[in-house]
Length: 171
Image (cartoon, rainbow, N blue to C red; front, side, top):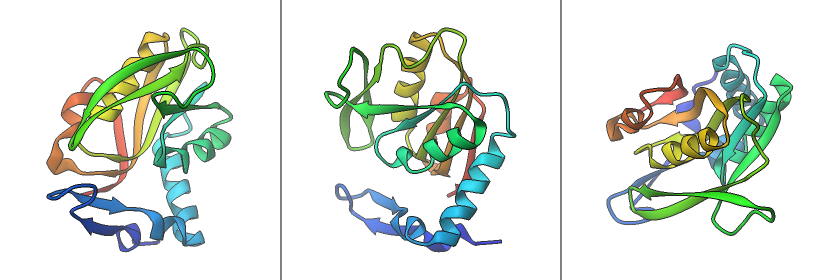
């Protein structure tokens, strides 16, 4: 058993004053913590039959492909606007510190695909909500929203009430 919180570093006033950033790089730098996290995130899925695991840029890319590999599913990257080379759908969203947008390839998810959405942190929920909209626009069925960390005091789960939300660490 590993205390994963011991590998999460708080960075005050990043990326702007008043925001405390949860830095997972110490966790990523420790092979045992990384393996324990990966196993825990996979366990959260209960090995449900899944067609695609969608990871949100950029820190969602660390674990989403590993989850996909274990579930024998495809990996789909959701990226910031202008980063994907093929035809895309775009969804804007609010961050706790500004605006942004996500894009997905138009052919990444087929109607009826069972999908797990993964990101490192659920904060205000805007990013995950935008990701869910993109997945559903393509006809995907969201089976679970899966996070390494949930910042419950920011109430991001309120924007995702329709979905099964799971996380390894809750603050």
